[in-house]
Amino acid sequence: MRSLWPKGGLWRHGDFLKLWSAESISQLGSQISGLALPLVAVIVLEASTFQVAAIGVVEFLPFILFAIPAGVSVDRLRRKPILVIADLGRAGLLLSIPIAYARVRAARGDVADAPAGDPDRGRRAAAAGSARPRAGRDRCLSCRRWRRGAAS
Image (cartoon, rainbow, N blue to C red; front, side, top):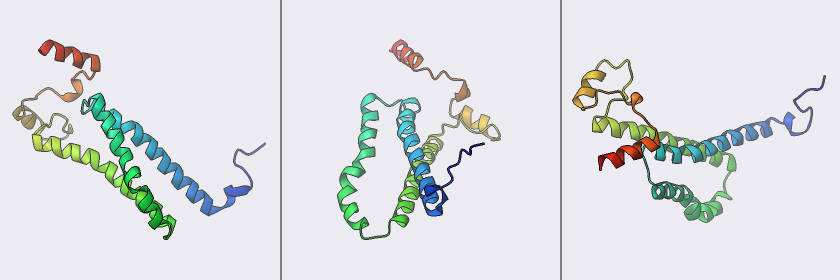
């Protein structure tokens, strides 16, 4: 029976496997964030077309501003620590998005999405004027457009 795992070449080198694994995880994260950020902007924040395009510009802006100066200085340093620090920094910045969103919602008093185990959920939801749970609301974009048209 033929093995699916290659016998020779780079697959036996630990350094290559570490680099390949790390780069694969980094690329997966990049692709997910490239899809998730515009989707979150449209679905959760109800961003307009221009706002989603602005998010794309802001995502690409660091490459335009910092690529040449950073490339000159990075060529003089070890690459492995730079790659690790850059990926950890990006992960931290991406993690700050849901944390900031949760803090803004908590500051506004919008607690309809509070966990079910929260003992004060009902009291705070009633105080905020939203006793109806958010999960039951219709998230259909065409329904939102219909409601906006009916309200005006």
